Image (cartoon, rainbow, N blue to C red):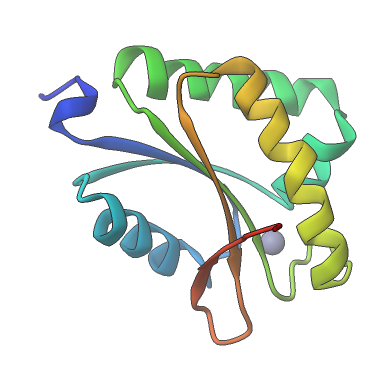
Length: 132
Ligand SMILES: [Zn+2]
């Protein structure tokens, strides 16, 4: 079983929503060419990461990131927000605003990794968020 970044793991912190799993996993595989995508799912992750609460969920995400980065050797971590999110029922603009502190939280844990903010739109297409 391959274990290093060179052999192909990336990571997503995604919503649990079934509509976005395959689009996000396919996007990551196509963009980075890594065959394996470690999939950390919770409901409305950007809201929780941006708010820094509840602590138990943050701890669970931290544990999973540890396995993905330190054991599997992932060096690319995407954070995902999406259209019509039941766990985070606010506008696209608010979710995009939450993505920035959510990504900052991940970056504070793994400054050597590439952190990628993603938005899944109403057509279930994956877009890279560009704040500039
Ligand atoms: Zn959602």
